Amino acid sequence: MSDYRLENRFWFFKTGAYRVLQYIVLAGGLAAMTATTTSNINPELRSWLAISLWCCLGLFACDLLVKSWPLSGTAGASNYLFSAAGLIDALAILPIPLALLIGVSPDTAWLLASLWVLKLTIFVPGLSLLGRVISLEARLLASVLVIFVIVLLLAAVAMHVLERGNQPAQFGNLPLSLWWAVTTLTTTGYGDAVPQSLLGRMIAGVVMICGLGVFGLWTGILATGFATEYRRRDFVRNWDLVTRVPFLRNLDPPAVIALTRLLRRLELAERTIVVRRGRPGDCMYFVVSGEVEVEIEPQPVRLGPGSFFGEIALLEGGGTRMATVVTTAPSTLLILEVSDFRDFMAHHPELARIIEMESVRRASVIKGRSFDAHQSP
Image 1: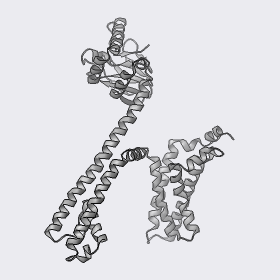
Image 2: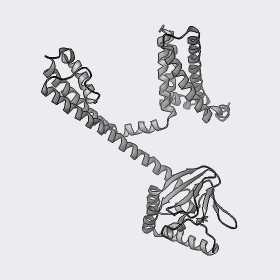
Image 3: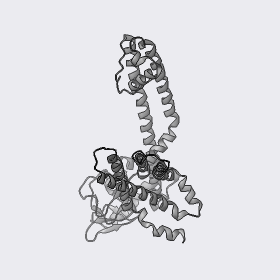
Image 4: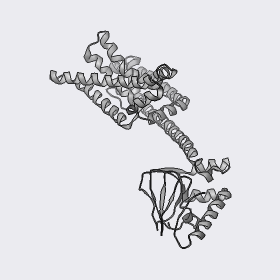
């Protein structure tokens, strides 16, 4: 059987319904594992919980089989099994049977079902972005980690020297002092270990301030990395969308790059009002996919991919919308705000001339009809 036929055969495993089923099974399996650790469950319910856990394990095993089966006999199967997603899927299946085979008690073996939560890293796309940010910012994060370790060790040694005589139970050895340093540096508090000497409390204050600084640095690095990576991905997506609009595609590369950075993507469902007649015009729209309908008399006009609308209000200095525009199908639009519109037109007069010429041509053709839209040739 060909790979194509196998993929068609297992089409359900690629649907959104199957993804929802996976979420439900994951939540139910973790809930069942948690319930088995309680001591006051009657034997009948415990049996049903065990059956539920085996069913969850079986579904995860089928999921791994389906993901690798269509590629059996090719390098793709081994590639998936040794990918991060494949290893996580295998880690959700193998440890429990192996633990049972080597004689671990079922109560303990089924605690390995907690590894199922790792499958969330596959289900949630945003976690891949987090992984990329951590990878890109690894050097900066490691630098802050070094600062953390330096403060941790020096504070622990200082407190061990200052407080071991008065509080041997809390600071009598370096591991105990390190525990105090960790709880203080992470600003979770002293716990049951409080310095008694004045110098010890001063050191504790410095350690807490250093903790705020260290975690502030980590937060700032990750936040900046997220923002940069999101802008990069958004730029790539917008670039792809811009190149689908015919007259934008003909701009010179620097103009396309500048416009891509300014445009904002908008995904709309069918029968969504994009602009209303009489409202202030603060942006123009480019239709990348789908279709919109401009409600004018005597007959509405429909605009498909490659069209733009909303520019007349901007050319007239922020005038009011002259027509209502509604999507007739799920559509992807690109938005150019009025401030960006004016700045871009000033730096790229060739596009300004195209838009102005088309607006004049349209106005002369439809005299007297208010129509804030344009079908590009």
